[in-house]
Image (cartoon, rainbow, N blue to C red; front, side, top):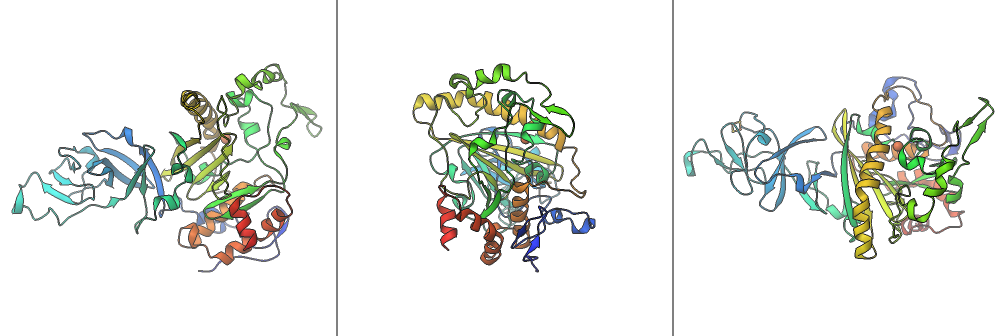
Length: 445
Ligand code: FES
Ligand SMILES: [Fe+2]
């Protein structure tokens, strides 16, 4: 395996950096498209969210496809079980079958009956005991599962799973309140994830309900750098939040016109900036406000995270959109929303507004605006990045390196990462602001 790390190379942004890997398809030829290195069906050796446990019926198995694998989901003896959907006998679909006996699923064709580990326990059409030679000798692939906060996670790799708390986000283990939701996007998971915090929000989402309630914002800055720590690739910002806001309208002399073309929103934005109403668009703000939610780690803070998460820590909530490949053209967007309520009233309020501010306004009204455009996006043509596309570039570095080194972020050699992060670390040290513990550790290394 060769790794293309070149010193003192001009980046796509025209800046000199150390430790560059090419992440933008510059159009030389289709084979050199770096996006091809990121697996179209996702990174296998990870835990993935599959379904809310409450959606699995008691008496019937359920069919789902994840990472291109057809799965049969049912209630096993010790929790939700997942096995491959294809019966090893003649290939019938196990999820068309029934759960006659506790903790098992029976194939609809000849009644081979499997336990939660995928082992055949009985062949109902042949008879009990030694009549059949199949029980105990034939099995179907089993996918290890763990259920956390009512969400079923499955290990999609073939080898031994890593410990769930080593891989899954820390908010699932630290007592946070977790709410979840999912939608389906008709698009491959890679462009779905790369729909990151660039500046698309102020344009494509300009008429989303939550964006209409506020002035335009910038989502990123020129000159921001990305830093990879563990499986996360966050941005290091050079300025403070204030600079994220833009004037209500700006004149573009190049086209001799204002953008936005009208200033109607001024008529109501003041109203939605007041405390009683700003919770509707300040999506991180519970009201009454709950504890601020800023993980003291760069790895799990705002930014993309392996194997396909976009994480946004804002105000008092941590929002995560996890792009789970269904097949090459469909992605399940699995949303996690973590908060730390300060009282039961606060908790009640957060639970009450979730359906309106998150499910409806954010995941659907706003999210489907992205889908409308990106489901018709070409992910094979040459591309020309702007200097605001830093987050996408950072994510691609992490994903491409993970793909090159065995499909796991923790297999990327330290010296490769060190080289990649070198320039960002130099810049970070000149910042006079609080740095998360893992960044400080990296600087001291
Ligand atoms: S095909 Fe499944 S039992 Fe025969
Ligand atoms: Fe968006």
